[in-house]
Structures are given as structure tokens and as C-alpha cells.
Length: 82
Image 1 (cartoon, one colour):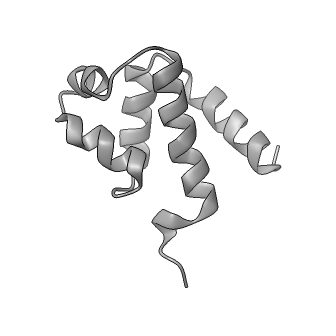
Image 2: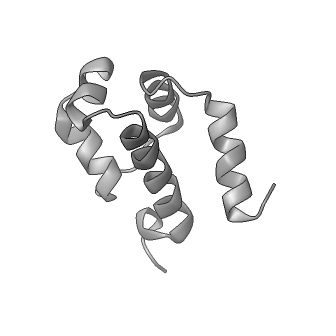
Image 3: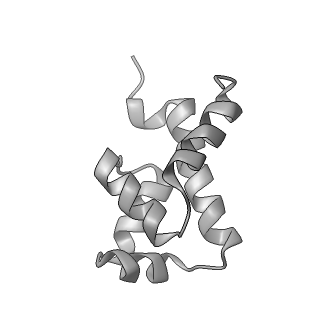
């Protein structure tokens, strides 16, 4: 069974978060500063080396100034589960 961190649905999740960060013109270090975490925290979840838990996801959506529920709806739509 493949490692859950490498499943296509988690890859989509990671890519969506990274894309939003880039769309907003933010560096990994800027998001990390907003979270009070090292830049490597952002790098690791964007590259798939680290999974995010729900609380971390919510904190990241706040740092990116996006609505967590809207993100989830977009994620489900992209998976074809809306």
C-alpha cells in the first residue's frame, strides 16, 4: 500500500496550498514567519516530506488569508467530489 503522503489526493492538497502561496506573491519564509515556524516547515509540507494535521492546515489558511471552508470546497471539486 502506498504511503498516504504520496497519494494523489494529498499531492493535490499540497499543490493547491503552494499555488495559493505563489499567487499571493509570498515566499515560504514569509508564510513561516506568520506562523512562527522555520521556513523548512513550509518547504517540507509543500514537497511532501511532512503531512499537515487539521489544526496546522487551519493555521496555514489563516496565514495565507484564505477561507478554510472555501479551500476544502475547491479541493473537493477538483477531486470530483463536490
